[in-house]
Length: 41
Image 1 (cartoon, one colour):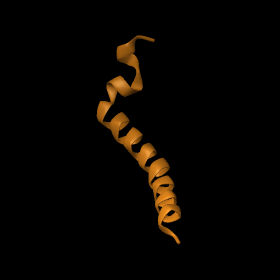
Image 2 (cartoon, one colour; image 1 turned 90 degrees about the horizontal axis):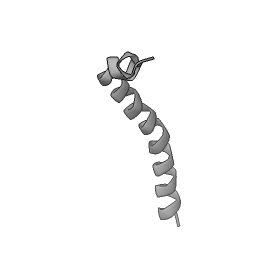
Image 3 (tube, rainbow, N blue to C red; image 1 turned 90 degrees about the vertical axis):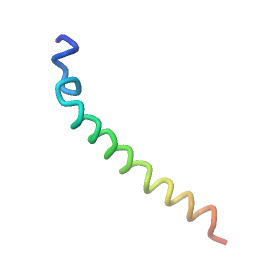
Image 4 (spheres, rainbow, N blue to C red; image 1 turned 180 degrees about the vertical axis):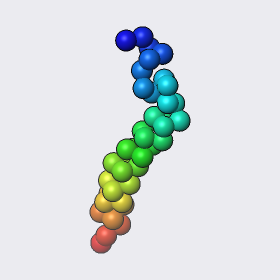
């Protein structure tokens, strides 16, 4: 498979939005949990 045939190379906007979504799904709950843990006294 050539590099130009790869799905992310053919659909750069879709791949970028997919990665952003995955990172937000992972890090929003983690950061919220850590924030609550740090400031709950």
